Length: 173
Image (cartoon, rainbow, N blue to C red; front, side, top):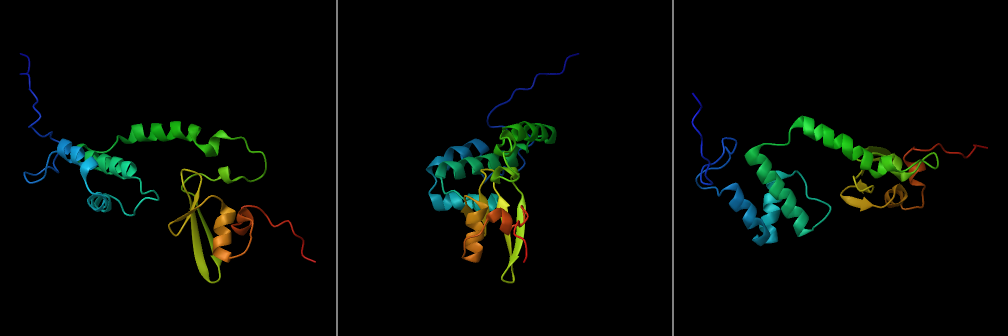
């Protein structure tokens, strides 16, 4: 005996959509409302889903990331095996892996997420490599390590030297 067919209707929430309550609109309604929300309301949603604000203030970017989080909360996140496969595929496309090293160090040698820490003037400075190949220091983005080191010290420095990525070639007298 075959199991009875089940019909699905848009009014019936999925079993995974436990976050939907009678006073909360459906996922589809929440997503449809995003393009018309004023930016302050969009930022409130962002703050509810993310620990910190992005480096970009693009409305499309903010709305798309919030939309993803709404769907992730309602339907569950990405399967870990799929996530792992996508990361492996993405590594081959990363600027860090796609260029041949032409010298001992280039800014592309550092993988996204790498954190460089340097003590300077009794302060610890943490620079994080972004996926775009930039360097973040205290919420500010820099195009190069040298620009970040210049910001920290106030003088011209080789960023790779300042952060200890290359040895100091100068000989002491």
